[in-house]
Amino acid sequence: MYAEEPVFVFLRSIVKKMHSIADKELHPLGMSHAEMRLLMMIYQTDPDPCSQEDLAAKLVVDRSNVGRALKKLEHLGFIQRAKDLQDGRAYRVFLTKRGRTIRERLFKVKSSIEGTCMMGTTEKDREVLAGLLERMDQSLCEENYRILKDSE
Image (cartoon, rainbow, N blue to C red; front, side, top):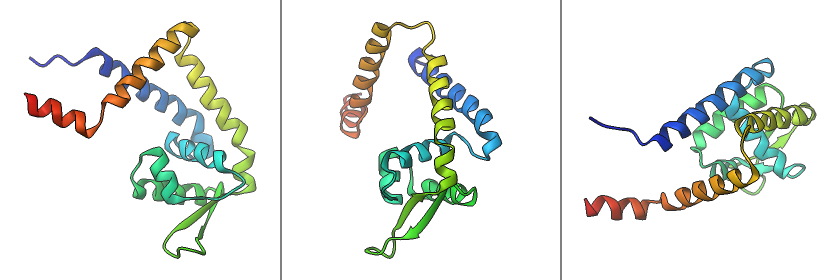
């Protein structure tokens, strides 16, 4: 019988719960956690436009998924996309006035979810957890995977 590693059970559960809460909070705006995450990245570059390619790379998400999310955000009036003048195949993404007006609301949702998730933990707990997760993240690369797989 296959026993799943508890660490990954909890990681999946945490992410699923965070997404569920965010989706409920964001429903009145017509968006989901995925669009919120994208807007949060766009806020980091504002007032300068960012490229669709850069967003996909920073979020480690498929370009087509970013494109669909941007199309939805554009439809909702939170962003505008325009062809890049230097590269006609690329798009530049700009926040609209409406997109800027929801900034604080989105940061409050994010902060509330993260605060709830960390309830009952100390600063030391968070430091230790962050260090362990960072180590796991660094270990999880194609090269390490191949080494482990080839040694079996």
